[in-house]
Image 1 (spheres, rainbow, N blue to C red):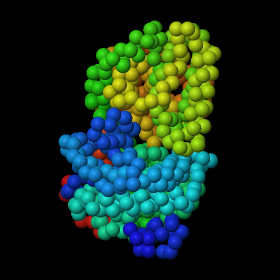
Image 2 (cartoon, rainbow, N blue to C red):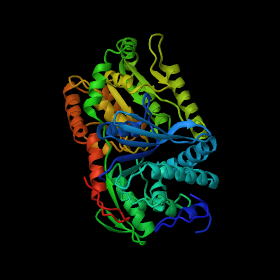
Image 3 (cartoon, rainbow, N blue to C red):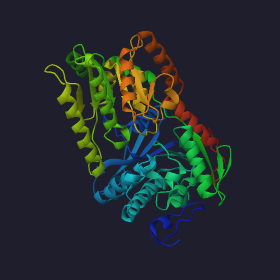
Length: 487
């Protein structure tokens, strides 16, 4: 979009951010990153999108992960999915992805305003990349397509699509947590940026707390009037805010874990443990995951339970990312120091207490590791949902299931609170006691907890998540000029 063309929006105006002057068709999924065919490592968002598109068919649009001066759209098809991807230039990657998305929005959304950085050049790059996303989506969309935008990288996208004349039903889903309004207002020009979401017909969030935060922000800061989950803004725009906890495909995950039991990697891990029981954590290296606190809890566990020497091994799988961000490099050094301290004080010639692995594994291999584990530690300081918690449950042997130790600050705790051991990750001693309890939990209690958790997973699987969101999107009043969309 040309810089001299104003983007009028009743609630937010892109030009203000720059500092200048004023259903019945296909399903189009738009996300920052697209998981291309053949890729083996992916986060929860990518896995969920892949599963729903494999089931329903449609198009997946977004960044290919490549850095190149060639930013043309490349199209390919695999099964029921059409992929439309493009590269970012190095400058775009730095400003849009590394800076504004991951040094401004990510810490804000996780309540770490002390780590939030803001530069106008990064904001400009973020908006420019969103405009290219809008151009590519507008060219791909037919009038009756449903457009589903994912996550904080693309906050302005719906407004930019409206500016290009699109009247489609547009939904937005935020995969991260959403902090209270008093935290959101620390974002420079927050009313304009977050107000752009009002161009969506439906805004989906992970938990009821997140939905309340969004409603309270729209009411308190933007003057919206609420009627249930529907909010009407002063400019006349109407959007709905609803809770849609993201799920997994538990049956597919369970089958993957059963198949992985005899995989070479699983056998090798099992043989290396000897009599030691496996405790596992799987997290991208990020300050929101609570890794230093978790390691201190394990250190406390070993220090207060000497009988566990040689009997419990903690495997932490932590692929590193965003190494261009200084806070992540500092976190990496802190985690490695703690791992070295624990192993230095507690290791024996035939036993290493902590196995810390800085690489990712294909989903199939992780499923085998999860099935082998007796305890899984999912203890983020703040997380939107955390699908690792659900995947661990689905991977367990029903006859001898492991135990999930889960942070109360993960979105998954709202669903799995009566089946996991819920902890406050800042309470090092409390986390240590929970790990000890998990290791000693009787078989019958473990089975009962697992059965309750599996019922939750089956009732709220990924297809249910998708169906519920799309049904709500179709049912939304066409306040943005769209026509009725057929189911």
